[in-house]
Image (cartoon, rainbow, N blue to C red; front, top):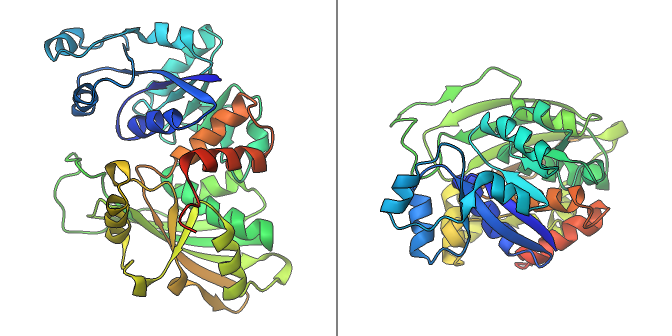
Length: 342
């Protein structure tokens, strides 16, 4: 049983904690945070299912005033675990790394940290074996995670040598106010970091991309144009067959009611998923189009929860629970219920 701790109980940290708690071969020892946020207060109201530890400089008086029980310090949590999942604000994880090294504890960092913080830039499907036994891994961002699922899926079946992407990016998570109220689209300079990150994970693929920020909160949409390797033509039927076999890709149709990003969020709530989360990405069958030797499609990225399965994969690789991509991802999928809609 691998003992796991979570640093930072925010948007991602909450979901990481829940994800670990669902794994039959892992134990969530506790979470660590800085202040009695609404997320922590909600945890207390639910009966404190997870032990709470405080990072250095935390507002201890605020926790006491709110009646939130504390189990110890951040370092005491680190001493009790085999591996930490660090979902601290960007830059904090790099500072926490010194504590992990001090106690000989492995760690997995989320996409907001710089690549230099880790030994391997990790994706559960694309390069699982590179993470086996490694002390420090870093996950890809939400968009890159979902994008690589589809590109890797086609690449393993038929071979891919080039992709071009357009990301229609939500401006903030639901409940965030720091971006303000907007009525505009904003474009970033090309290429987007997701294209560059894809090439870091899959160096044999030539990738480029453009990103557009949009004033919405429930998910990103990415359009992908992929070219078959060595002139191989990937037909719509071939792409659809590959996508439907993938347990982290949910193939849907517009005529079935999946009109856009909000449709997925509402459907997840109707399913009773906590917080309206979906671990899988959505892929519209209606958007798969052939153009000469290229195939085009569009996917929906549930940004708050999409990286959770790949983080569970990373735990499995780093701690050697499983040694291969097939075994590791299959076990994660089993515990998270991925593929149950088929």
